[in-house]
Length: 295
Image 1 (cartoon, one colour):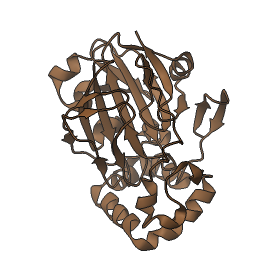
Image 2 (image 1 turned 90 degrees about the vertical axis):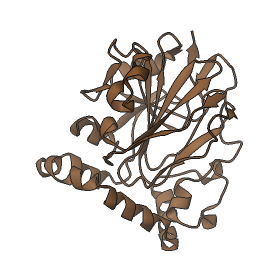
Image 3 (image 1 turned 180 degrees about the horizontal axis):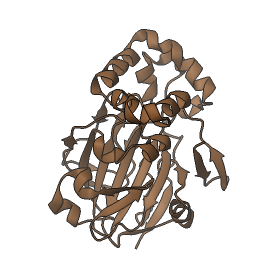
Image 4 (image 1 turned 30 degrees about the horizontal axis):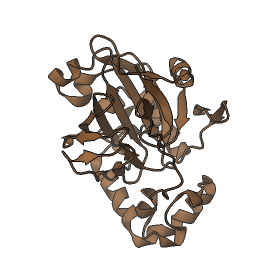
């Protein structure tokens, strides 16, 4: 069971996991722990699956997927019949009125829809723990001089499951640098995998860039690929002014993760997110909603 906190209802809920049986088979049994995760993490398998999701024939799965996971299509620009493939549906665009971007300059917003786990204070070595495994920024972004600037800072981990809106946005106005690419594997980012595979985030393919934010100092954006994620697609223009809430990019098919890294003393998180994160429980958030405030 994958439990998360719904901040709207103030209740714990169980996530309806896409591919739950396969994930459990791969990551939660003795054979899977040694063999199946390595096979599932291979680029060739992800590339093949991504190509299948681009085929016109893959459209037949859209309606079933929407029904099974109760996806509200009124939130999106296009109707089911308008999508050219399953991948086209997967990175569907929201309609302009379906998310409200909080434009208060002192309030920090979520960059996407997803489940948030927050580490409000990384240690002096710029490291943090997720599901029992220790991560360091050196391993995550592979830049020691940059990672030192974020010691004792805040780490926000947004997990996007396959049923979520899969585009990610800027949390503030500013200038964003080009993305740096780090090759890696394609392990699942589902909590089942995170508990069983050592350092998924630093093993997987990922990209990072720096948003030179107008109100929250320099923020490192890290996008992490996962099993069956065909691509991480950046849609913004580097070194050109962006606005709060504008699109940064999207993931093609599969679960994925967006990690934001902030320097020490920049924000304090909302109480419910702090409380649940201390308990090791993710909080469901929506693009544009307030999750913290500038100090």
